[in-house]
Image 1: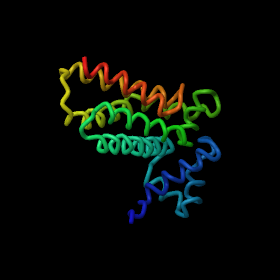
Image 2: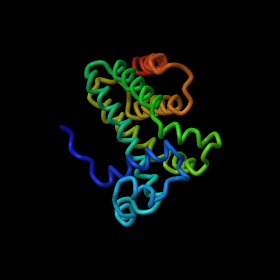
Image 3: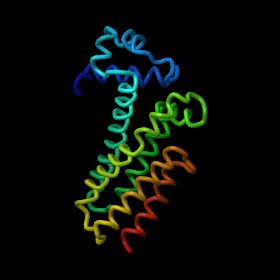
Image 4: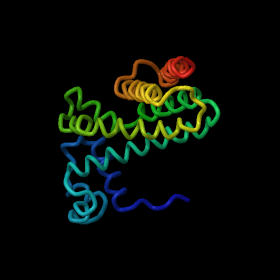
Length: 189
């Protein structure tokens, strides 16, 4: 049985739902308080300002995506290329159905420009967090790359996956196969 969500988690989940239903501009601390059934002050105490809420939403979604990456690597402890394929495929599958991500991406196409800062102001820290998780997962594998080249390979894989999260060009499984093929060439060279 999973633990009950904390107040902060309930607030963030309500904000995600409201953003996907009505757009970020319709999200207010008062509307979140009403939805969760708490006072506006409770919402402010948990997440601070609206930009703080946006950051909490991003971190919530990032945790979901990184959890998928971790599970994929754990499912393939002896084959790094298969782990990369599984992680890329699972991330792309999750992204395909992620309503908040679609709301953020639509902001880049003019739908709700208030969401654009969610993407741009946190891009560097999100990228760094993703690379750190992948690096931790890759460490147990027998890789014959020096640290600098390993970092470059991890950066390449993470950036390619994120690029396909933002702008898919093929079904997730096909893209994951392509990313694994590239990773195999780099790792076996």
